[in-house]
Image (tube, rainbow, N blue to C red; front, side, top):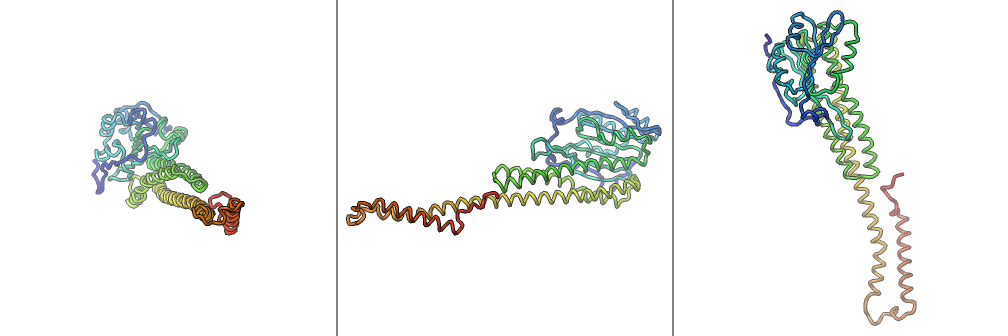
Length: 366
């Protein structure tokens, strides 16, 4: 019988989902069909059993065999809840695993470690994220993973390695598998951030060359995505450190070392998010500066035209007055003289402004 420790788990649902639903969750109306499979770590090797029922799992539990129970899809929540109850999972732990979306958390009971994370990914449309929740639960001899809607195989890389490995993992190796799974979810964020960094580099160049409001909207979307990723990484910084301080008996030396490396990885992800957010701010400032330069160029052009045409307008205004005594009105070459005078003044003004560098285009690309 497990006794809840101070700060035990509770369901803390997020107000807003960290990213949109993946396409496979759209197909099933937000809840993917439930699929249950079991990896049994026999001395001869790892056995994969699909499908599997509660009685078979309980029988294997009584044989003290290390098990990895993998549940994908939350359509059958009553069935999942019943299965976890039969396995002796405390009720406070069930709700955070099957209610979505939950905030990221790494928490412990006396002899239970529970981790809730979100697997984030990008879509074909730039600036959009998708996420699905992944819950991991480790107790003595049993590792449980509950995925909201993973398409295809569950953690295919690690699964293939386990099935091809001749030496079956022992009970103490389940903690290593736990931190491998968390590490895989966190590792997927680096290519995501690298893709965002590449997009931001292109946006920065586009903003400097030809600023458009739609480019600024894309930058705001990426900034929002970075804030979402940061919100998923931020809670893990403190919680992993707290887990390491508790010296949880479920974690061996290798797993503790793995979680220490994971804490460093979380710090690196957090710093990358902050750097990319700073780049978003820099792009926004570059957009404002570029738009300001273009506006200055427009105002400079209007000023040049005004400077040139102001004396011409003055001359035209003088000779447009209807006074009788104006010598040039009855002069045969008066009209040509006025045109020549205005042309000469315009030419002199243009040359003078050119020497002062007024005709230089500050927005031109070199």
